[in-house]
Length: 345
Image (cartoon, rainbow, N blue to C red; front, side, top):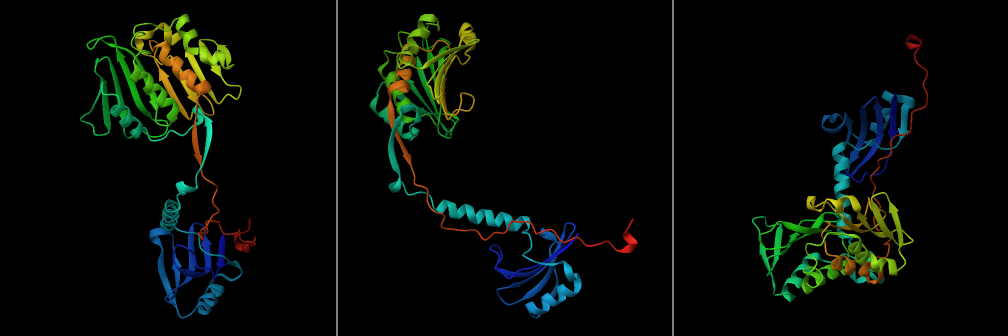
């Protein structure tokens, strides 16, 4: 295939006017004029592109291309090389970073707690520790991690400063005594809404919802107590094999209990899953808890999901203020040219 193109536009990536292009197989030739007035003939791709001729004017360049490639000449510019495409993407990214929506233009709306913004978990942690002096904070050898211990030494919170989105941000572990094995644990993703997180920490601060229940496995009575707020709120209750599920009619938030994991509590499998998003398999946020997690703690979280509210910020869609001049469209196919007689079969 032989293809040649003529173009008088100035590509965004190079400050040049490309007058003609010829591509043969995977090799490209074109003749641009740079802003300094120099017109050249280029051949090759990427780092193999080289100047094969210097011409006095664009008219001379077009005449030369017309003589060499004849009817194959087409309007357009040469496809960008890999380096040019990377430069264009980088400049576009920098522009996008400069046009971050102004928080002052954000619209704040009241939404169910499970759909609220996650807020700043770092600030939530610091506020929790400043308000509860029976908790002590210390940093580990890893600067990305903070650990908070309750003064009883039976409850510990590990906070991952680097966790983002669906990564695990909080890990909570409880022990029957300061020297015993772990009794139950809970993990919380970084995208968990602020109202849900605040409810969890308020229960941990109060202590009355977790201390008496340590050591109680997830039996029928525990499941009933933990899910009562959801049942009272009219959530749909279904049984699917070993899973008990409670969901809203929209199916955008739910609580799941796995009976198999509850029967083997000492393996510390995730028995409870609280989630919101498209589905439990692809949640926007999730909280996982093991079998011995206290029913009182779970009931408070279920109450927040069923009746709590929070805020969510939304930004108006801004009109595009920038139009990239990057041309990534492939050249149009050349018209069919009959093969020379010597190449016909």
